[in-house]
Image (tube, rainbow, N blue to C red; front, side, top):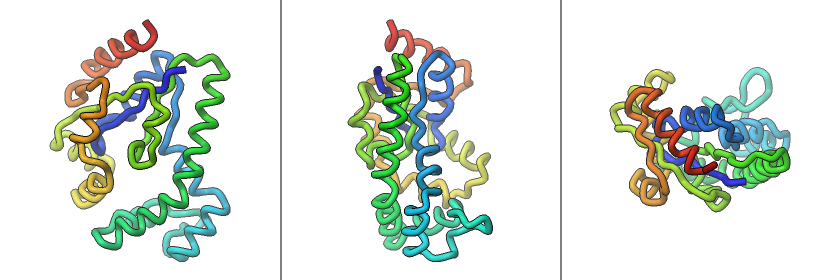
Length: 199
């Protein structure tokens, strides 16, 4: 099974490209979903509570991701230090989940899987990948999309600052998909990529 890793800036459209690849027959390795699942593990909740207290928990007793994000994406020096602590707790467990997902897809006879994980490089998950695709969109387009998700300019800037630079991501890519136009423009590029993957 070939694993294709998606890189791009915040709100560049990696999830759109992942969905389009899945529509064509790829399996999905979803880093975000794995991260959400890991945050609900009792041992992770215990460590999160020990570090940040009840303030980052919702009324249902589970981690409030928005409250936790305000802590770990706070300005330096506190934000980056707290994010690093959270990643030490969660990344090994997310890695295990992604490996399990990949094994399940491969066993089911899937020929291509797409890895959509915002912190892929930071976590070293690019080592699972046979090829890397960079999803490109201008900063203005990405900021507008982030605003539609309810993010402030500060949220956008903090999340962007917590990731590797776009230049680093672009240099690592085997393929670049321009997602600053229409979804059908993107789809045409994704279909060409798919043909190169499956022949």
